[in-house]
Image 1 (cartoon, rainbow, N blue to C red):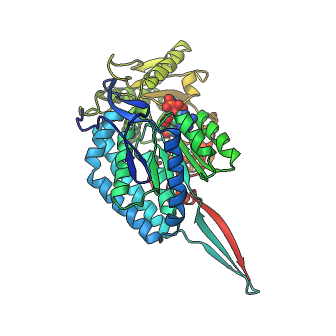
Image 2: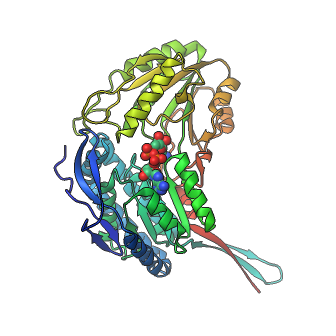
Image 3: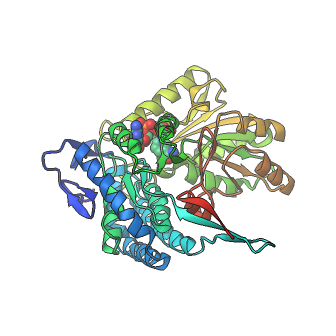
Length: 477
Ligand code: NAD
């Protein structure tokens, strides 16, 4: 593993890096070994109040900074991220477990988010409504104000950047609480922003007890917008807190992505994509392809070929050149193992894996479950782990009904060479993103977000920028 992981970490408030001092500590653990690698300070109430104060003071100045200057800071931060991608990637692998190339790839993809939002902000055009009477109406977009954002541990840099980049580009100030499990890579992202010239107070990074931090920040009059990525229950809780102050929210919550595999698909191409996609980041991805509904004519052939490929996925420490690392924390193998056991007890057939890999670290085998009954927990709750669940279907209508049967709707996938099927599926699936004959639902410049209990509001692209702006109409005689 990397020796570069700092022994102690810091908060970042009003341009200042703040050490542990006499603050409470969260131990950061390497999920490949289960060992503590660093100490992270938890913000005190005074720290949070200082962060709120700094965000309140910085907001009007940053809002009034010309968009070209804001964009230049973001472009410079993007360049620094790319320069430092190898180092930041090492920190990410040490704290999160994903294979090093995936970690480095996440950092460079994140840098592009800074670039994209820098350019989107320049093109955030308003409208002029020219009245026959000579009275004009102007529609303008203005930054919403200071933001509180909360991001999880599965993508320690990409998820925070989805919130930071549009907020900063729009002219907002922001307080970000990344996941306590994966702090160092997010801290280094902050350092890129600071080194790129972001003024003090525009962005603060705090850690602590998630519930205490979120309730304190969201209750403050300073905060005008809340953005969260994580689980459905926590998202609902934060929305209730935000409702008290009528604060805007963006909620990117769980998914349980259906994959409809029709018997006219290009089987080899489909398998190449979905096997790699399923086990990327050990399946801890909100858009991970998970519920495989495969048309009866090819079910057995597909399931067998999928399993033959999945068996070759190498598992181990993310620094060891493997395909798949450990799960990110001890909660995951426990939760995934319980779901697999429940499915087996209800009649699912285990084609591959089904258990943990070692006593050290939080590993779980690549797992394939076949003929999984609909009442199994894993067919209803997101496994968030390296498990593919499969069921056969006969007709297009049945496939769509199965895809839509859950209260979730983030990503969905379909594989077919029939254009009519592709068009029908694209329209009929209840999901924020549908990818047909590919798995790309997060290109960075297109809206990313869910429907139903998967949340609301889009991230990325022009829609992601507007999420940090309010619309104002000015009627001038
Ligand atoms: P969790 O629900 O406790 O936490 C999810 C995330 O929310 C974590 O990052 C956590 O720090 C944060 N969080 C928890 N309570 C919070 C609060 N009161 N205020 C602010 N932030 C809070 O669960 P977990 O064990 O970390 O993950 C379990 C499930 O969460 C997964 O199975 C998955 O379904 C979901 N999840 C989704 C995503 C995603 O990308 N949408 C990411 C991580 C986890």
